[in-house]
Image (cartoon, rainbow, N blue to C red; front, side, top):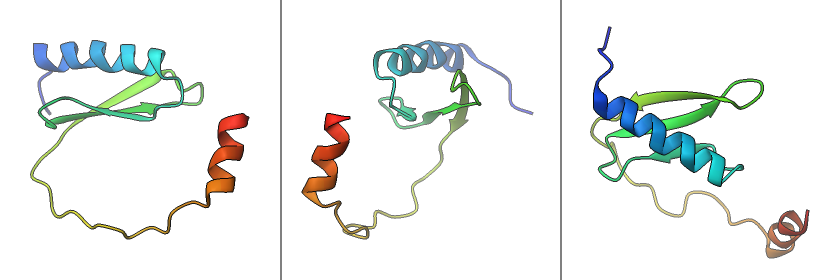
Length: 77
């Protein structure tokens, strides 16, 4: 089991503030990209924090872009 360190608690506070400021955000990474926070829970009021390891690869242009009409409609709602 991992020990919770001060850097984890500091990142938790950073992530909490980000999720408060941006209510539709589901993930947040620290500047070093060593930690990621995931919004979680039925009420979306929980936070999972994971330590990240080495990246595997970057896969560019793998997902078809969303049509502009759909994007604009979501922004209006």
